[in-house]
Structures are given as structure tokens and as C-alpha cells.
Image (cartoon, rainbow, N blue to C red; front, side):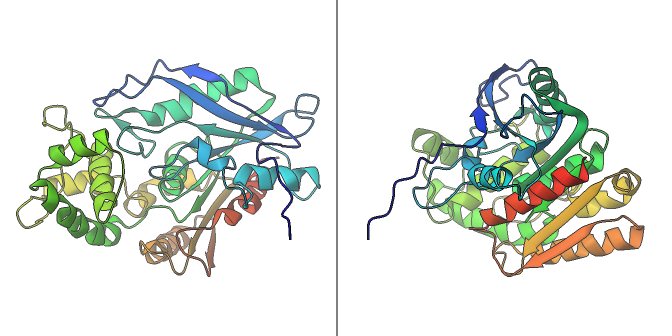
Length: 338
């Protein structure tokens, strides 16, 4: 049977890629570009319609805005699937904003870092101003969502900036660092054995040939998170690792800096901000390979105890191949904002 060809970039609406010359991103320690694309999806008739809410899609670690646009010949991408639903009247229309927050280390966690740059300010200040000036947005009716690191970013930005993002959705977002990184750090140490336990040697090789094999992902993830959570401009790499190299013993002072970013640790201080949200949606698959389902249960329990309204959803999937979770979540966020 012949499979009909599909134009993966043909939308009922349209996607634009305007270029933002950032004044907030300075390139950081690793010389990342300050000129960035901001992918913007406009649903059918957006320019002629009343102003629309905007939903910001934050990518996971090692991902970028391009992940939301279809590249696979047999699978619909997130934007394509949402676009089809809008055209059929199944999903509420919204403008989708996909900022480029990629770095040479694979991501930014959407935080401000002396090592990587001011990505929190970029996402909460510069990109919204850039988008609102050019498109028919409904003012502060913004939602934010993402998976994995993107879900972490959505949770954390909601805790800090409910006036900017009054609706948020996290799919398998990073939470409960003690549990998650308890598995990741030993794998990173094992991956460094081939590089004489020298993170700089690992990075030198990775920058020359950016491929990840075996435990390389754990190494890169650990180094990138250190650049985000424990930057140190006086350190050789621009950041401090939360463990010593010989036996992996935690360095408590550095580890406490990491925990300050853990949504599970942040939630009590952020409770009043979260009560201002129009929607807080949290979900995770019960087969998640990074054990985030258990941390999310703990976070949901804390939210309940604190009296914070939220939706906590568990599904049968894992951490991967769950892009089908996005379109109904985007629809849910859009409806909460109008």
C-alpha cells in the first residue's frame, strides 16, 4: 500500500520565525549566540480575530523550539496536531510562542546564570515584549508549558511570576532533586572515567563531536545543571559540581544551591503566588524513567496541604514518546486564559 505524502510544514494557520537580537543574553561563558529565532504559531484567522492568549512552549534538555515543529515523516508534530485541532474546532485558538533557549551545554533551565546567561529574564521580559509588540496577543493572558526541563521551567516560572504566566502546565517536569540526581550523579561519574575524571576533557571532546553515547548524557546533563544551578565565575569551568570526583561525596554547600531550584523545595514559599494562578496542571507517566512520578506525587501532596488549587494527572506512559500529551494541554491552558 502506498502511503500518501504529507507536507509536514503545511499548517492551516502559519508559523513565523522572527529574529530577536537579545540585549539580555550576553553569550555566557561558552559563547552562545545573542541573536535568536522566536518561533510563533498563529492559528487560522489570527490577524483578523480578536486578541488571543499566548502559550509559551519550553523545550526539554538538549531540545529546542524546532522540536515542536514536525520533522518525522510519519508522525504529526505538536504544533501540527494542535493546528489541525484548531481548524476542526476541537481546540481553543491561541498563539504559540517557542523561544530559543538552547546553549552549547544543551539547555538553560530558563534560569539566570553567570555561566550561561539570563534566560529567566529573557523568557519573562524580553520575549513577551517582542511578541506582544508584533502579534495580536491578549496582554498578560499567557500560559507556559513544557516537558522534562521545559516542565520544570513552567513550574518554576509559575511559582515566581504568576502575573506574567497565570496558567502553567508541566509534563514530566524535574522535581525532587534528591531522588532524581541520586541516580544521575553516579552515572555521570562512570561516564567521566573515559575522560580521566576530567569534565574539561569531556567538554573538549563533546564540542568537537557532539554525540552522546552510554553515560555521556548523564555527564552532559550534570555539567549543564551545574552551570545553571551552581555557577561560579571564578571556577575553571564557570560552575561548581555538587560532588567530589574521587568517590562522589556530596559537597553540601553546593548541593544546597541546587535544592533552591527544586520545585519541591520552593513550593511553600511560593504558595501565595500559586494561589493566584488561573490553572496549574501537573502530570507525569507512571513509567517515567527518571522517577519523576514519585516526586510529583510529593509536590501534589504539598500543594493540597497548602490549599493550592491544581490538577495532578498520572498516565500510563513513560518520559518519552508522549508528544500527544501536549495539544490537549495547550487547549486547556488557552481556555483557562479567556
